Image (tube, rainbow, N blue to C red; front, side, top):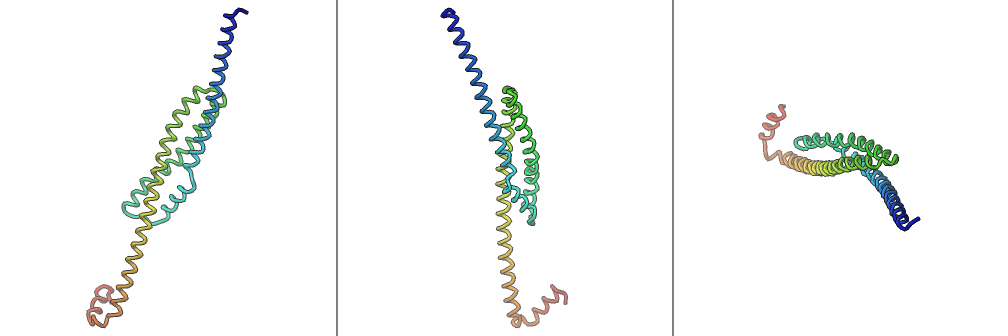
Length: 179
């Protein structure tokens, strides 16, 4: 074999090895990304967010809080259905990668990454709104409790001093109670 043929053969072998290494690296990278995306999608369905959603469904919301919850409930329920679709797409990418159709897998992976990114943003937004609604409801309950306490105190004071009001108290009782 001549020196020229040896150089060409060596370069050819290096190119083939480079291509094989590149394919294997791409395969390994895709597998890691698929596994990571699966974990992210499973995090969408976290028990914590589901508990917050269930809690908000059980408490009595009204006014703008109820409107806000109804709007974001749609986003939350959409996220649940989207997460199933994303898991299916992720599985398809995994299968495509396993069959070494790496160009197709890379193309699918790009679309999947974008969809997962958008879903992550929605999860963050939903969680923020749910937290705000829960905090606002908690504050409202405290304020209502304070109002009831003040009412009970004022009522007790009026009843204990009813002798000062004489016939006026009876007039108001008939007016408001009807007896």
